[in-house]
Amino acid sequence: PTSPAPRPNSRGPSSRLHRDPTGLGAMSAVEGGSDRAGAERRLSTGASDPVNERPSMRMNRGLSTTGMTGKKAGGSAGGGSCFGFCKPPQPPVEEVDVVLVGGGVMSATVGLLLKQLEPTWKIVMYERLGAMAEESSNGWNNAGTGHSALCEPNYTPSKGDTVDVSKAITVNENWQLSRQYWAYLRTAGLLKDPQSFIDNTPHCTFAYGEDQIDWLKKRHGLLSKHPLFEGMKYSEDVAEMKKWCPLMMEGRDAKDKVALTFSEEGTDVDFGALTKDLGKAFMKLGGNLLLFHTVTALRKESSGKWLLTVQKNDLGAKTCQVRSKFVFCGAGGWALLLLQKSGIPEIRGFMGFPISGEFLVCQNPDVVHKHPTKVYGKAAIGAPPMSVPHLDKRIIGGKHMLLFGPFAGFSPRYLKTGSLLDLFKSIRPHNLIPAAAAGLQNLDLTVYLVKQLLATDAAKFSELKNFVPTAKPEDWLLVTAGQRVQIMKKDPQKIGILQFGTEVVAAADGSICCLLGASPGASTAVQVALDVLAKCFSKPQMEAWSPKLKEMITSYGTKLSDDPALFKSIHAKTAAALNIK
Image (cartoon, rainbow, N blue to C red; front, side, top):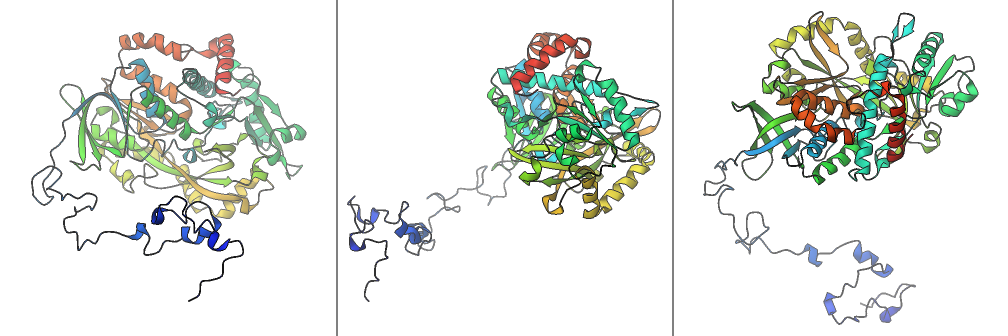
């Protein structure tokens, strides 16, 4: 057959495709590089291509069972020849000073603090998944708000004719500890780029209707006089509110009675990115992070130490054991199950009720750029405090977007990647009565949850329209957020109560400690970590650590509310270090 005519862009027989300037013959990669004429051959491989050639198994019976080496396997991983049924020998128990269970923001904070206070201690962190911050700390599984009570209505409830702001002041005090510690890590070179996890995002509180406006006026009047909330603005003026929240005011009925407060010091925090940075710092100082390791059992020995069994998919015994002087469990909802296995009396009466959440997400840049703030409104009557509706400017993984919600959901899992049996596994004779009492006292919450579960897409979109009057359905998609486990526990007055805050449960001797609950969660991780240390370590030990703690956290051991001048000084330094206000 005759040869095909050359393509118009080919230079025929003299083309460089047919030359062999290297003299390598067949070894010359004639179809390599970016030559247009060789594109067809680069995009498909034929039967004669080297990558499709292999030795025949029929002709090579001496190959190993895996095919990776020329040697045949010689028995089980543990030696001998029992056809793989022999149980490999258990590795020796590893001795450590501290075990951290879970790779979230709390374990990362406690671990890093301890590594800075005791550089010679052997500290190991076990995470069951393939990366840190894959559950509650992940950016998609929380609100991403730097909770400082600048905008959250649930921290300032009405009380008679006034508003109780005491919780808001406490939350803000705790937030300042996080700012100080992160700023110290930045100046120490342990956090490279604060903008990878924290962004200056003003916080606003939204009031709709006369009753809410009256409440917001009182809230602003009390908070704006406090040094930690200085600069908070209030307005009912449409023109000013358009400057703060243009998307929310666009297309709004002029008859709507609305008001806003505005605090420019607010932040958006990608706690997933922060946790990963804290993990890197922890490892840089000598801490050991082990992924795909699940703590399945633990028991206290007569020596006072804890013996933990860790499951891992290795080629040996599949499990290992580690003995530790101190155990911190920051494993989200699973922390309750693990602490129940510990058998400490302090966990008696505790049970967890899991609640999932959903957010509406907008990624349309034309819409996103019109809302540069985080805006919180008041929760519906009967809704849990953590369900206050909010429209947030978010940055997750560098992507700018808006999130609205949360809408409540239900799953019996204690983690997003947990088991459907988690809730049932937590049931014990000692927690049935407190749980029943808490349930009877919160029947309205059950009704609210059922309504949320039955809510249609149209109903959810209607809720969004209260915040964004010009919203279009095609701009908003529904995503599932993380799991929250609300704590039910014994109470001397009410037999059992449902708790929406954070709970630290520790053994009397301080050898094991566990974090339960939710709000305000990750934002106050540093305060919780400090309280964990104070609860679990002796007074002489804390006194020995005090100079280093004060070096890292200037206000350690004091209240900034009592020293406005110190607050202004610290606030300015942390703002400069973290590139926020």
